Amino acid sequence: MSIDKETVLAALASVQDPELKKSLVDLGMIHDIEIAGSAVKVTVALTMAECPFKDRLKEDVRSAVAAIEGVTEAKVVLTVMTSEERARIFGREPEEMEGIKEVRNIIAIGSGKGGVGKTTVTVNLAVALHQKGFSVGILDADMHGPDIPIMLGISERPLGSGGMLLPLERHGIKVMSTGVLTGEGTPIVWRGPLVNKAIKEFLGHVLWGKLDFLLVDLPPGTGDAAITVADAIPLAGVIIVTTPQKVSVSDVRRSIGLFHSKDIPILGIIENMGSMRIRTADGEIMTIDVFGAGGGEKIAKAFKVPFLGSIPLDPSIREGGDAGRPPSLNLESDVSRVFHQIVENIIPNPRIKKTL
Image (cartoon, rainbow, N blue to C red; front, side, top):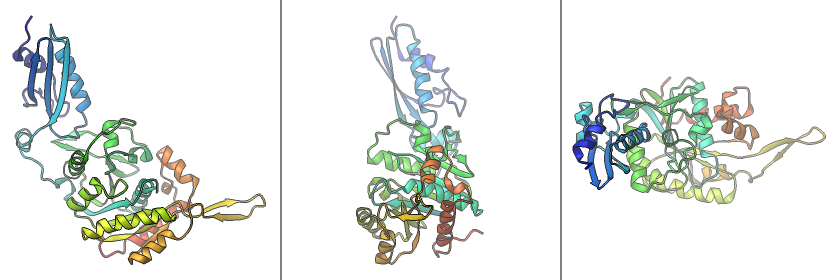
């Protein structure tokens, strides 16, 4: 039996978009069909690059094609609709930054190098802000190491609505991350242009709604993601996270230099992994500076920016992150009090739009 495009389209007519509940064929999502003997390749155009149903759609299309009599190989390639195609389906194309139009303050959390606990700081700051009565969201812009879902205990996938993604919510905080789209452990092999596109979609095509604060967790360094955020987002400012040790402080200088070159204010420096308190055998409390001391405060003075606080090296921070329950949830803990004080140091900054 010979295979033709009409046969393939007929088989695909039963495959529906999970959100729109219409056939992919009727929606115009089947962009191309290539037939070579008994092998068939179908190109499907998604409504958005970060479509939460893309894996499901890909498998549904592959299964439908593979079921055609005479087909021995079925391959599916995913691409993305043009703005005009999206507008035809949804009535209009969402504006590039529509998703953040009701967000009052967008703050990027950055670092000069990896391993300084930037994501830990982002999550616990978000919790502390929420506990003070603010509405808060987190955009995980670390596309290659999206750890926000783990630290908040999120395993669900987001849903779509009218060509927009709905953020997930945990501990009262709205969240969007590639980690909730791809699943834990799935490698994200993207070059710069795809990273830039994904960040812009997370801003423009996610229904963040009304937020007092949207914290953007940047990847370490001064690469594509940091530049895209600096260029594309109306930031209230940037908070830089460092550890006390000299090598970390040196890298912070480069990160500050990037944002200064974009005329984006530095809201302050947070020093993570500061002093650790332990109890000795005779019951005394001893303070140990595992990574040194005072590095964050020194660089804040050097650049004439606020020093927002030092977070202790405390096992509860690691334990809470692994369990998906940030330690700042416990209002009685020393760690929580530190994060609440940091929030108190951030709020008076004139760059912050007052919301309470």
